[in-house]
Length: 413
Image (cartoon, rainbow, N blue to C red; front, side, top):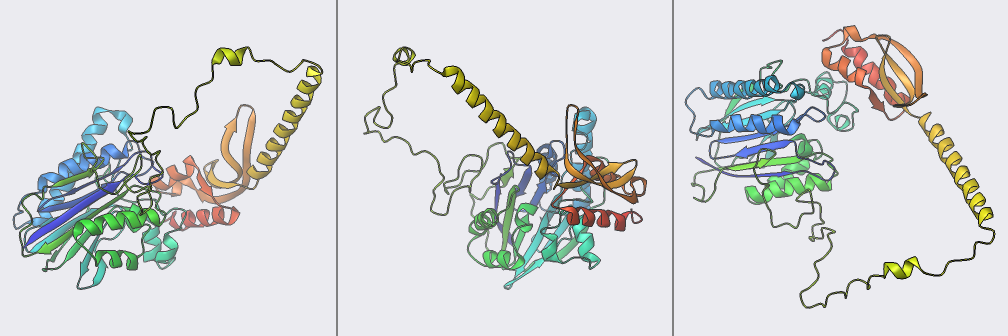
């Protein structure tokens, strides 16, 4: 059997850079997502994909051993980068890899990118997220739907960072003609529902499905980079011109699609193709027809002015108005800040602060509101660092929920 595949990666509507990387070839499919907030997540994901893409050849019988070795080599390569440049310490990436041998798939997975199997009209998630919210789902404390809006939904527990050398999940499954395999970053699976993904995967070619999955993710409000890889298992050999696809941060040049995308992303425009860009001036329109003739700066300079009568009074009134506006703005800002809450550390304990997590010279914009008995020394290094950096909350109830989550974990890690 053969793979017919497509790969699409888009920076999205919010991010300034794409930290996703992806690769699709006749034997290999992989998605790596640079962990948000880490140093150079784009470098981590592209480094991992460049190492993993060496798997794209017919595998031997030990398909899982090959996968494990490739993931470890990708992790070692990230470690080498950090050793060469200590400023990169903290960079990390997820990795979801599917290796095909013509009859079966081997899957290696670490992080929260995902692999799915669409078979005979039913969609099944193959991988298990290594995230804090997934641990809450496994314990029955929250539902899958609640996890989509949880304040710590982006907290990853395992990733390739060149330091901890985490072991990936490894498994295999037999392939069938008609199978459709779907790999994606959390920019897609974190936004689209299971039913919506199944609906799209049940239609069209791999290229059509990949494009629609990215488009649907962005239209559903995804604020992250979105990478989707779709591959069909077929008895027919793929077209000779179907070359391996490298997308996202790992690509030398972004893939161009005939979809009318705006600056910084392929899918910013509406389905009609309206990208919001300024249309070019037609060749047959005379120059100057779209703008007024420029004003002579010398004419402006010497234009008649109003007499200076009572000018001092006008200046005084303007100054008073500006002072009044500034006072109102400052008062409103202070009132708003005192309705904000965040969680951080004080004297070694998790503390809820009232105000905003910022400082001005000589002015404190927050103060300790509730001190808890949760000690940072009893948390994992990851959780403790999260708290030290400060965790925003929607309101006091949200802040207390955050504290409860860490309290429940302090004896686990």
